[in-house]
Every structure is written in C-alpha cells, then in structure tokens.
Image 1 (cartoon, one colour):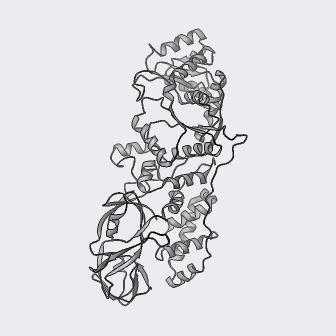
Image 2 (tube, rainbow, N blue to C red; image 1 turned 180 degrees about the vertical axis):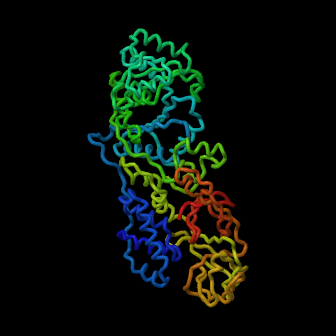
Image 3 (tube, rainbow, N blue to C red; image 1 turned 120 degrees about the vertical axis):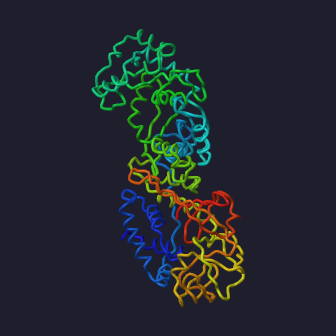
Length: 555
C-alpha cells in the first residue's frame, strides 16, 4: 500500500461518520504525492482497496486508530514558478492574448495566472490583449465573459487592449514584408495550397516579383473577393516544421467586426498579429501552452524579416480535466441541442461552470501553481482540483443536516430543542434546532436499523431502537454510540440538489451526467447566503444556488 494512504483513509472516515469517501481520499493522496498523477488509475485502485478495508472496520476500532494518528502538519502548497534565467526585476512584461470567440475555461485560467504571476514575481507589467482579428467567430458577449472570468480569478492586468486597434500598424508591417520579398500574395485554391504544403512544393505565386506582389496586396483591400487571395510568408516549403511552409499571414474576411464594424476587410492571422503586437507592446516573455511551440519559429522569422525584437518564450502543458472537455467543438453542439443548459452548467470546465459548481478562484490558482511549467501531457482528474478547493471552503462551509426520502422517527424522551455547532472546528457559532415537533431520518438509514440496536442522532445523542421497519421508534439515551445518523426536524425545507458528473465518458456524451435529488434540509438552509458553500453532513459540499436549489460541489 502507498505510504500514508491508510492514515488518510482512516482520517477521512473519522471525519465523515465512519465511512471514507474514495474521491476525497484520492484528492488527498494526489495533493500530497503529485508524482502519482502520472498514473491516476493505479492510484485510484490503491485508494479503493484502502477505503474498502477501512470501511469494513468495527466503529470502535476505527475510533481507536483515528485517535492514535499523529497530528498532521498543515500541508504547504507549492507556490511560485521557476525563475526566469536572466530576467531583471522591474523589466519583465508578460501578456495573455485570448481570442473572444468563446467563454473562458480552466485552460485560459492557467495561461492567465502563469503570465500574471511572472509579472508579479519580477515587479513587471502584465497585459491583457484581446486577439480580436477573426470577425467571423468573435462577439462582444465573449469579450465581456473573459473580463468577468479574469476578475473572478483575481487576475488584474496593468493594461488592457485589443489587437484590432492596431490594424493600421499591422497592415503596414504586411506591406513591408511584401516590399522586402519576405511575403507574397497567393491566389491558388485552398486545395492546391494544402497539396503543395503536403508535397513541400513551391507555389507558382511565390515566383511573383515585388512589384506584382505589391499590386496583388493592394487589391486585397479593394477588389479581391474573400477566399480569392491571401498573403503568405516566404518561409521554407522543405521545412520539417509544417508551420514554416509558407503560412498565411493575411486573409480577406468581408464581414462586420464586433468592435471595428466594416472598417477593415483584410485581417491578420494569429501568427502575424502576435509577432507584431508582442514586439510593439514591449513584451519580454510570453508563456503559452505547448501547442503553440512550433509557431514560435514563425513569429521569430516574421520579427527578423521586419527587424523587430522577439520576446523570450516559454511553454507548458494544456490543462484539461477528465470528462470535462474545453473544446468549443465538443460543448457548443450540446448547448445548441439543449443537452447542456448554458456555459455556466456545473459539468463544464468553463470559469462560469466552475464558479456555479462551487469551485473557488483561490483553489484554481493553487491548482495551476501546483502544476507549474511542466510540459508533460496529462488530463487531470477533477479530484486534483477538488483537493485544493476543499482546503479553501472547509473552514467556511457551515454544516447542515439533510435527508432523502424522510421517515418519521418517534423518539421517547427526545429533548424539545438542541444546540448544534455550525462548524466542528471554526468560530462559526451554533444554532438552536427545534425538535419539539419530532424528527425524520432518511429512509435508507431507517431500513438499516434493527430492533434493540443503538444509533447516534448527530447533534442529539444516542438512542436505542425500540421498533424497526416502516414506522421506527426509539428511546433517548444520551451520549454516543452505534451508527451516526443525520436527521431533520419537522417543518424541514424541501430542496433540489443538482449532482454533476463527468460530461463525457470514453469520448461520448453521458446522458446521465447530471442527476437531481429531491431532499429535505434543516430550515437553517434558508439563512445561508446565496452562492455560499455548505456541507450537508454525510453527503458532501454544495453551493447554494437559490432558496430551493443547491449544486453538489464535491465530497
């Protein structure tokens, strides 16, 4: 067994009514042992065995083993990123250049946090630059959503700008490339261009002289039809880096832009825009996911041809969560078909979805910082993020009782009211619960009771079962002993809990990935602030979505 795993399972069981939770224990293990994230299935199997062993223990043996556990040192999350070689304090400028073509997700969060953190580490500047050069797919709605998402994350740029505001300079740079013979206008069909790139064959248009190229370049702004001409960089058609095989730098997109309207019809590619903007904005270091690594050569070549400075570049692995794809191609059809309500659906890894589920921005930041600048590809289990979120919300999540399918339990000698602490270890006070009208327990718990057995009604005390079955009864003894059971008083509050699961399994949409529970909670739920976390005892953490609905966050 993995060192320390049993202790984690025992500790978790002792904190959750004698039943360890696999997801919670796995999250604890992966947080303590990041090296195990390379093979999560194997770690999960070990956790399952440990949890099974612990959950089969006699409750008295579990209590003794839990009491003997050594006091655990608070886990220190690894903070900070690797130092930048040669970087000077006060001289580092970073940027985050999202395209406003969709709602921001956890992958965007990683790029934004890393770039903002490096600027902070070196007392430099962080630029938020909207890469808005594709009018066909960009909308003000997405632009605003990115701003809202970054504000939620606590990522605050020193400067915010839009690439489309610099179109005159970018066009001028394109003209200089044409004049220098570093770019040419191609009028070949898309199929012919693709075929030449695959065959590493030069395009016939590449033989045009500077005068002819300039003439065609001017025509792109006036006469040429969309799709009939593009400006291509004169790279190397023999290169093993396919990005360098005469890539497109400008194309004609004759549709209104969400900010610029119809002012422009010739728009730069990402590679052209980022090369110019990074240099003119004074960016010294850019950090992006490694899917852009092969494009760094092209940006440097464009800067070289224009005599412009190129920033230092760093790359890290993409961040995706298992069963929660970030791809717009995967999620948009589900929204359009009504299978997913909107981008704030708690099954999605969008920032809106994570927020609605109850994930806190500080947890996202700690999670991102724990991954650092590694380039090792992996799809992280949601439990990896959960372990950080649990440490953030546990100290502030009040404890409440909740039951499914309530069954009245008649208790002889039941106190008319009880005082229950709102949190076992923090200064959150207590609440008085009126029990004079009787109490109810979950049908599943009632079915497990045997006549003559004992149970502990959490917050009330020990009872002996005097009648089992569909109409159970008991007598109040006080103290503690037997199975711990939560309960709700008469007049409890009816509540719906949404339980999100993995949206995709084995690459396919899971129709059952969002379930609903019809439950009854203590009336004190109505006093919880909307959006605040709450832990329903023996169930898990939830976020209050409304007076009548909560969303399950995690165990």
